[in-house]
Length: 361
Image (tube, rainbow, N blue to C red; front, side):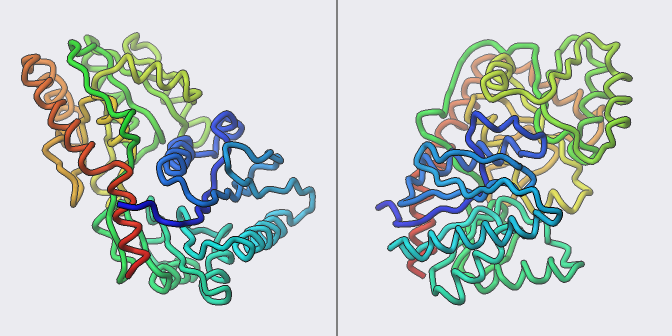
């Protein structure tokens, strides 16, 4: 499948700067860098997150649109400035196909003007859909735009955003998909957004009851006040098998991940937000030959490769214990099947095929 001619617009920072601000989603930032490496677009541009008041030099063939402003209403001015710079680039490029990573207040004007005034073909990658409720006027505007643009690449089959849409749960670099046959370590990882609905407290409660396994936690609080989060960490600090590591650099995170053989994805099934996105970390874990325990199943994904648990500690403990009882041959056979599934469904060839389909329709 030939590589599509495309211009990519994201909202990312250089990987070395991903720890500049806790509000930067490391998972989202890493994913966009990976997408650029795999997609090899004609041009890659980034609208730096508005809250980040730092000028960054272009590097790694990525054009960073950013301006450090000190006005009282700098956010509005930044949006207008970013839009002007982005449209100037769109107008100057010969390539007519534009691919945006998500849609929000920072890039909405660029999308609208590119589509309806500059007459470019506008495609959108929807990693998640925070506007699914359609409660506000802004939600309805986003919904209208996603219906009117030329195509959408979705991560979750429950989304119905556009007549021209393709589904791709995630994307992996072929050379980074691993398989190993080592004996399972006693370390389990829980990483990402540490929130009330992402299973943070469920993980803590569970491992406070089974001290023969270590729980390694990395990430940042989600939905907690500072005092609430610190109180929870303090409550479980007496358990020596539970280690909160904070927000890690990519290098240190990779080292921790390498120590673990089981990974947790514990989203609350009753939270509507989690019915409209697919956690990219599941693919990341599977690609690193980890066994994934999940509270959710996902349409269009081979859920037989996820070990299902209910959203309570009794069920989770049972699943963990059952995994450690598995024979080594059975574990390796599972990993081999996962490895082949990932190679056949989540690599560059799959991405190019789906984007070319969106462009041609």
